[in-house]
Image 1 (tube, rainbow, N blue to C red):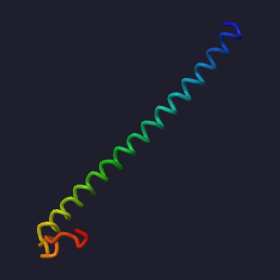
Image 2 (spheres, rainbow, N blue to C red; image 1 turned 90 degrees about the vertical axis):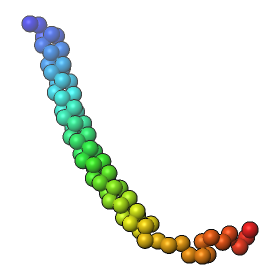
Image 3 (cartoon, one colour; image 1 turned 90 degrees about the horizontal axis):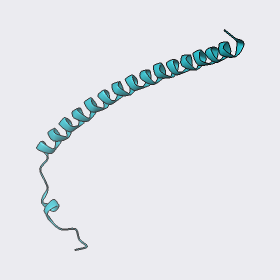
Image 4 (cartoon, rainbow, N blue to C red; image 1 turned 120 degrees about the horizontal axis):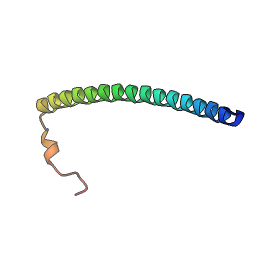
Length: 71
């Protein structure tokens, strides 16, 4: 094998290693984002439940039925 072909193969191997590392890094970021999304979904579900509980116990005051004074 001549020196030019050897250099080309070496460069391709270097690039491949870089792309493999990049793919691994992106995969790790994607997994972390998936976990974050799952946590946020669970938090939103709990907040919805709490809001529903608060709304069920809330009774409107008579002033809520009146139009604002600027009408």
